[in-house]
Each structure stands twice: as C-alpha cells, then as structure tokens.
Amino acid sequence: MAILVNLDVMMAKRKISLNELAERVDISLANLSILKNNKCKAVRFSTLNALCRALDCQPADLLEYIPDNE
Image (cartoon, rainbow, N blue to C red; front, side, top):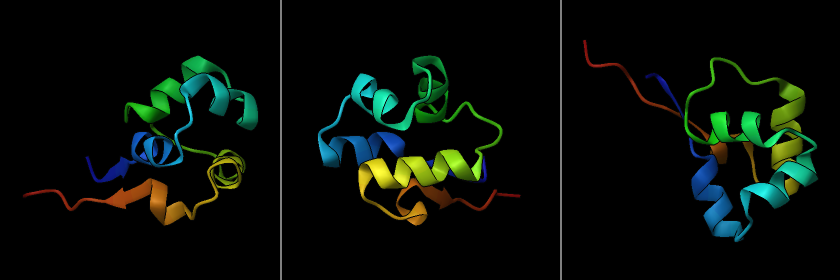
C-alpha cells in the first residue's frame, strides 16, 4: 500500500470517537470505518476537508506516503 490513512491516530490524539466524528463530518459510520481501516480506494477532497476541519489538522496529518518495496 502506497498511501496510509492515519485517521485512527488523529482520532486518538483528539480523543474523539468514530460515532462523534461521523456526526461532525456527516459521513456514514460504514464509510468512515472503511477509511479508518485503510480499506478505501479514494477520498474526496470535500471529505478530507471536513475531516481536517473536525480534527483541527492538516491533510498530511491524515495521509502518509509509504514507498512500495520493489
């Protein structure tokens, strides 16, 4: 996997639950869980914007590039 989603790390730092974040961002629990568990294939900028606003962070706090070992 080349892009790692560190949503769980930011949620722990901000002490916010999945349910509370889903309400703040207006996203379903299922979709937020997929994102949190690195199972997503894409993220809309509007979703990323809402997550950054709710968690008071930058996109780089949520997304990390991991080079593939070839």
